[in-house]
Length: 423
Image (cartoon, rainbow, N blue to C red; front, side):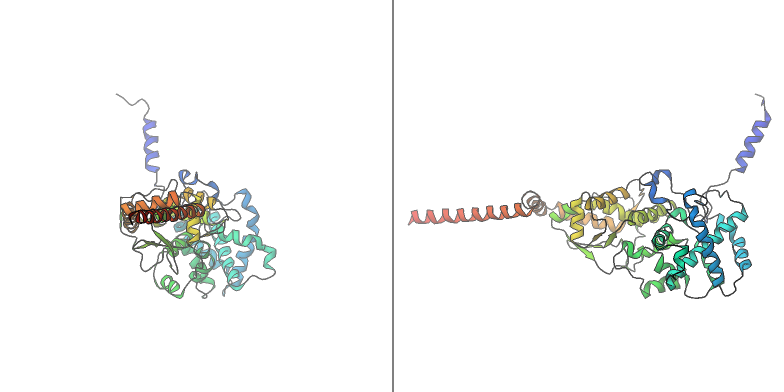
């Protein structure tokens, strides 16, 4: 059959040949998928400042463009060379690589993209230095105090990232101390927001400073920090996931919950006998958004190593209601800054929605199987039933004890009566 219009085939061939993969090997900054962001759209959108090309030009973020330019100018003036041309040349050289780090096709021209990356990176670096050296009085004119923390949290959104290697190049052009990684770990990584009393220890600093950890951006660095633990071997995984009892059910069966103090790794659960040790987690108004963006990064970039997603799924099983939250608060495992235990329960239950776990952390599987075996033992099941039905409130406990006491007295009285009759 003759081709009636050969031009159609030519156009289709040209279209197919022009098709390019959406992602490159260097891609590490992603648009959060529609499916993931359905649970909480607001958690992935910057509130104060746009960083990088994804949200550049968003109408509600334009007020921060002038402060960004002022901070950029101040950083360049702070540098030992004070040479704008060297900074521009550096970004121009890196621009093709930077463009490949983003999942979307950047609509900006090369010149526009260079300007965005240069201003945003220098703004971030000056922001870090001001936090380190303490804010001066005149800084409040440029960036009021009430915006400083929101800016820091906006730097922890997946769609609001710039590649870390660009920040390093520009910082090294300007200064040689303190190390940029030290500043980032102290003033951006959300350790104390999520892990109570978290400090950047000398060992952690040495780990990041001495090893080539291949840091992609602030989200990647935050994830690596929260997973840091010499004893964590989460690389072993298999596709299997057992049922998990809730924290209240486990407690009723005799499982003892204990806060794991001084654990550098927030996901490092440990079972010893019937004692389940869980690192403490602080729940603030910012915790949900930070965790959602960390999980989104795992889901986009490293699903086979989605250890934070595994941790959230595990907590989701442990926490069903506010009673479970209250128990974990009492044991020092959850530090609740939201005030409402039900809100904490809803947060953890919501975080696990639409999280894909093709495999699961083998350490967790071992722990949960041992817990299931403990709870499934006939004696422990009877203890759990007794606690649930007769000792679930202080009044029921008192009434149950009183009933048992009266029963014992009745038995003793009956025995004495029988003995009297016999004699």
